[in-house]
Amino acid sequence: MKPFASIDMESLKMTALINGMSLAKLPLLAFISPRVVKCTGPQSIVQVGLGFRTRNHLGVMYFGALAMGAELSIALKAVQEIQRSGQRIDFLFKNFKCEFHKRADGDVQFICDEAEAVAELIQTAATSPDRMERTFKGRAIVPSKSQDSIMDYELTLTVKNRSIAAGPSNGSPKKSMKP
Image (cartoon, rainbow, N blue to C red; front, side):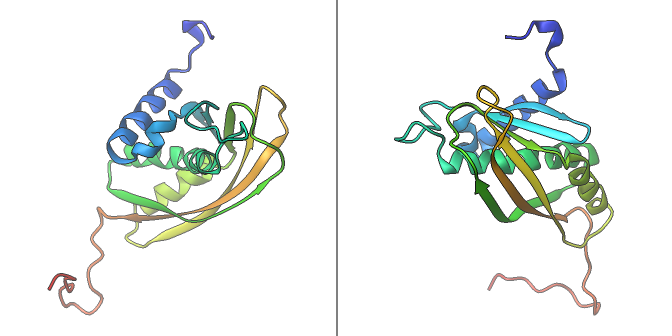
């Protein structure tokens, strides 16, 4: 355990934010209790513990828990930048590709080295009504075993600023989908 003086307060705040938001909006994410290790500069790191909630019958992490950790390692910087912007920017992941190299037989850290590019995408979306997307890469490690990647992944993040009204191009009002 780290002494109190060396605790990264930004990571602690982001962990509280992610766990609080997930309780209300993403209860499955709250169930695995992810922890933000780092969310500064070019890197974001999220850790998911291997425990009774995340372990399968073979004693390794469930694919679903691995997918949530991978998604959160990229979404973390997006959430941080959206909060800073003060705008209503929605985001989703369009696709997910991963390759497994080893078993996830310990607490797993999900590392995105493209956090600054995620922030840039959100900053660009803050000034545009258009939907934007970009693919980001990450890797997962079991730091108690090795620094070797157990999984490499790619997710495409798609964002749209709902604060900026994109008016109809022909001057007519938007049609409602309600009958």
